[in-house]
Image 1 (cartoon, helix red, strand yellow):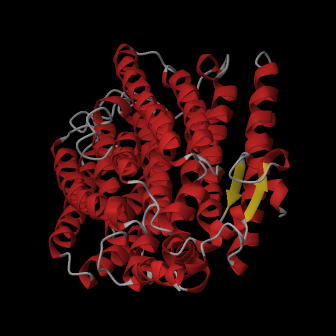
Image 2 (cartoon, rainbow, N blue to C red; image 1 turned 180 degrees about the vertical axis):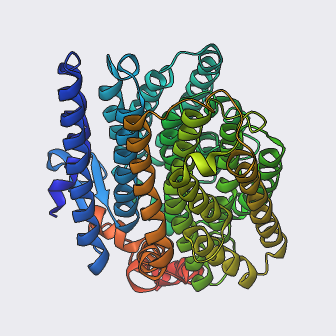
Length: 537
């Protein structure tokens, strides 16, 4: 894949949205055209991954041939390519599920265009090279999510939609305000340029509070403690397919941006990391533990899965916090970042898969209240098998994908002597297993009951949905049994984030890269202190 072809990750979903909008009266054509664009997107994402991983290269394109930091930069490195590939596969599986499960009214109108517009915002967030276009990508993603949120239009769903829109509007207002202040302080919003300034220890002291405030902006979108309160009451009201799409992508976009900003861009600034790192580690522990306690106390499948989104975010925060903690060895930082990336990829697949499973549970039993359903092991053995694999992976049992992500994070935490957060992570994993067994015992193992005990199965709906879930389970199994290959890619991405000199060179060129970055990116303080001596000579 060439550097200028990466613009296809914006063009393809945009074209898919426009094409399906004009076909809104032709439902079958909408489905086939939409599926074609999604498969094409998967193909180019795999091409990008195959291009950047073997060589560790970075594909950079400057829009209109305006050089950075003055123009619009888009870039695909190993981290971006991994997120694009897994995200595009998740989108296709959710699309397949929606086509089979949604009725004509739910798929009619402009669901398909909004689906592609949501994907446009997500992929643009993964490849953008400056903060302002990240804000634009976020807004496209959120506006599409507002429209998709209203599919089904139940009373509970619409009630939560107002909260969802209001809180995201407040977050967007804070984001754009911070961008204005950052531009006023630094004179740039280009990510590579801000990274260069941070690596050269030239961040003005007045910009530090503004940059630290970005934790709140992205933390609200990621649902970290104490900004998580909106998510548990929101996602469980959505149709299961939409809940799976949001759980698999939207919160993970926030986690991706936090890694990009606080590990790559600002991870070399001691003034910022000494504030952010302790906050992230404390927040990680609280997010994990309180989130999983809330999940164990719930008694409906979608509520349990919704609150588990929060507890799983804690593991991602743990990796970020360890990666920027002062005094931690570089190899441990790389281990922590690689574990966080691996865990994000695993969670995108497994969390979406479990939400789709909850939809088929409702299809078979008529409800997702664990006190009103049961006997699904005999009535839907394939669903029971797929759910069990995904559930055990979420809990972190070997040799499934969740085990390897948690193992790497726990190893990094143990080697850096952060025993408290490691203990909380282990305890959270045990409670996660307990909550998954709770769903299994009540929903699948207990005697049959509920509204649909005697209702015949609707094969086109259940079979199509089962295929979508099976694809995600196969993806999860490949991450477990092929963990070494996936981890090597995550480790490559982690190295480029801990030492972002290659990213700075690729975007800004050799001239604009600080000399110390090219020669010795680790010993920052020595170079800063020796600079005045050179001048005096």
